[in-house]
Image 1 (spheres, helix red, strand yellow):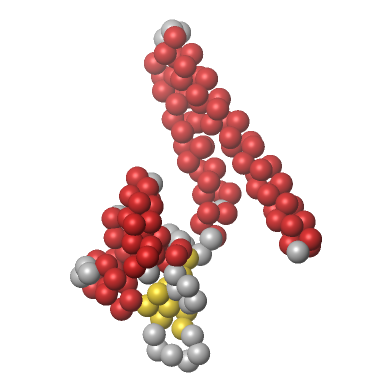
Image 2 (cartoon, one colour):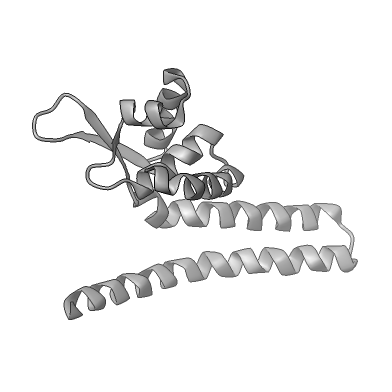
Length: 154
């Protein structure tokens, strides 16, 4: 994994900007890059040179948000942590942020009670989020069909 240290840092910073803690962000990227069964708790503590509680907290955050899970392999007692993709494919999770932005911006526009350029901009942007709410399910369905077709061709 040493060969990936720069990418783990680079993409870890990106994941931090998306709301993950610094350790959770880097653990997530590490798991994306991990070969085989993922990584054990000990692998992560050793690689990141942080406290066990920091790694434990990061793994707890990742598992609680369904970004990672763990399994045992071949009857070993060690748990191997790996990335799950469910959170990336959950339409309700994707659209919930769009819905919040739409309702918030539209409510602020109405609450201001002023018809000016700023209110028009709020309305325009809230309509973008409303449009995204309608389009995401269509895009996900098209994506599923494309994946299915692609798998059949292979």
